[in-house]
Every structure is written in structure tokens, then in C-alpha cells.
Image (cartoon, rainbow, N blue to C red; front, side):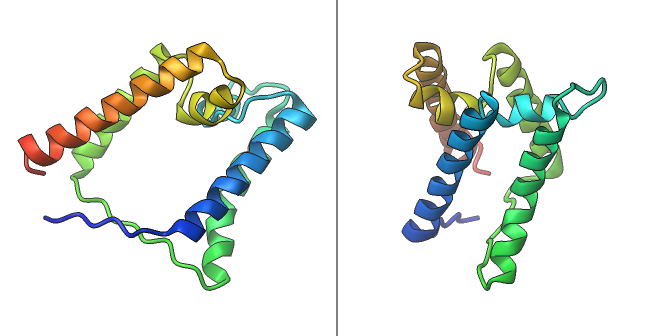
Length: 143
């Protein structure tokens, strides 16, 4: 199975700008880091006292692609692996988030923007792990 990635510079730039703006606004108005794992953790019982902004942030992340599609955009989506592989991958990511004290959005977007040495190190580890995983899954396992 051949995997093709379409080059979408303008859509990617627009998405990156929106992610950056949302991270800046969340920090400016709530003093919080826009790490999706931390945001979602506060939405799981027992609820935290500031769950309102967390729910609004997550709702915006869900609604934005819907609005994009309604305006004529497309969101290509394909899953080239089995459901079992997705579950195993999700578990591994969850373990990494726990031991890495944050996720790619918290470290990669917000932490690196603040020049956090811990976030820079975590992002380097994320990226190296991704490169190795993609190479192994595609070229060694042939999936």
C-alpha cells in the first residue's frame, strides 16, 4: 500500500497560524499552556474548577474542521493500519505523554515557544521516535 502525502502549504500555514493564535490567547487570558492532554484531563471526572474554558477549547478543536468543510474545504482522512494497531499506538502515546510530562502540543507548540529546555528535549525525543517508528512500520514491517 503506497502512502501519498499531499503538499498543502496554504492550508498548513493557516492551520499553524490558528494553532499559534489559540495558544497565545489561552496563555494571555487564562495563563495556561495549550497542551491537549492537560486540557482533556480536566474534562474527565473528577472535574476541575476551570472546566469551562477546557470544554470550549476542545469544542473549538472539534467544530473548526466542520466549519472548514462547510466552507468548501476538504479534510482527507485515511487510516492505513488496523484498529488494533491504532489502539496499540494510542496506548504507547499515552505512556509517552505520562512519562514525558506532556504531549506534543504542550511541549512542541507552547514549550518550545517559551524556549523551555525540557520541552525542546521532549520534542527532539518525540521527533526521533516518530522517524524511527515510521521507518520500522513502513520499511521493516511493510505495513
